[in-house]
Image (tube, rainbow, N blue to C red; front, top):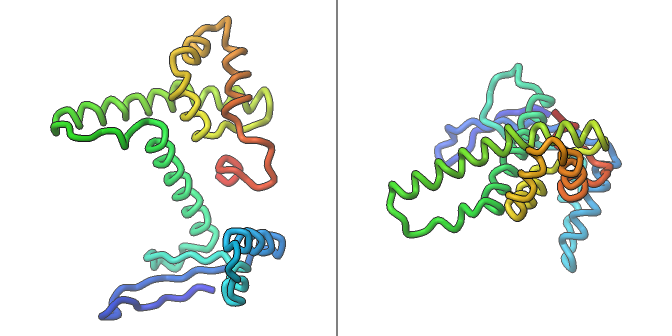
Length: 189
């Protein structure tokens, strides 16, 4: 399905709805999860039927923009949401209160520099090493949670060539995704 609707009070905003059916196995998993999350309430028949579809709503009106591209774009959007949640949950962005504008800028710039260094100099190379050794992907959320609690100890091991294997083992144990049936971000992209 690919259709455009006019919405809003004055019906001037164009929204494009792109949808495609999902495999029955995926639909059934979605239904099970919905029923579990609904607890004592009953899911409507219409809601359960909609679980058979992947539906994307976009303002991109280019007809060359396909369902597959919409799916990929939304999966990247979800990755960005996870990155923001990781920052907020593990890097104490919520603890910045009652500071001057200059202090706020210094704190934010310092944290963004730290994020960049952690991601580029530790997470990316470590992810490749863990993948090569154990065929597991590192979870960015688990890694940031772990590193926020064990920064100094872990970085010393990671930067010491004699203790690199120990750092890889630690990351594999505490920061890697468990073996999972559903795809993680790295499998999608």
